[in-house]
Image 1 (cartoon, rainbow, N blue to C red):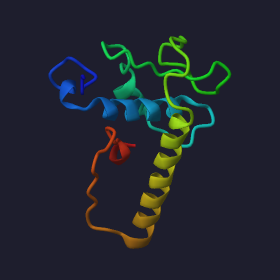
Image 2 (cartoon, rainbow, N blue to C red):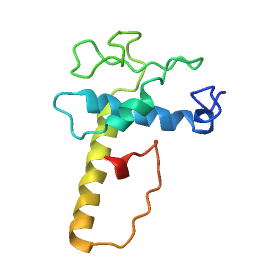
Image 3 (spheres, rainbow, N blue to C red):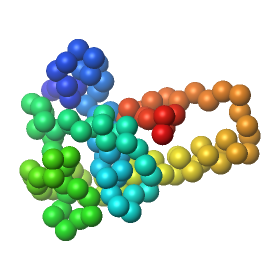
Length: 123
């Protein structure tokens, strides 16, 4: 089983699931009624599903999510139902809690454990 989603030397060191999570955040970013902005996730995840692993980011045709970054429906029901929404809600919740913590505690330093190619420090 392939554990990366890219063949180039730099990106092949990042796990396939990290690219998937970034892609899901990128899809949420593309929504008009998005829960958060994450243009970096859109960039990091835009090539996911275009390689040998054939993972396709697609949702139901009547969904408000774009089907993929090219605007084409490639496959249906590839992702488990609710996965995109779950990642979006989780991301928003962590954003809200991080903002609250920063407001209330004024920490000197924050350590980000970059799961899913986390772009939180740059957005």
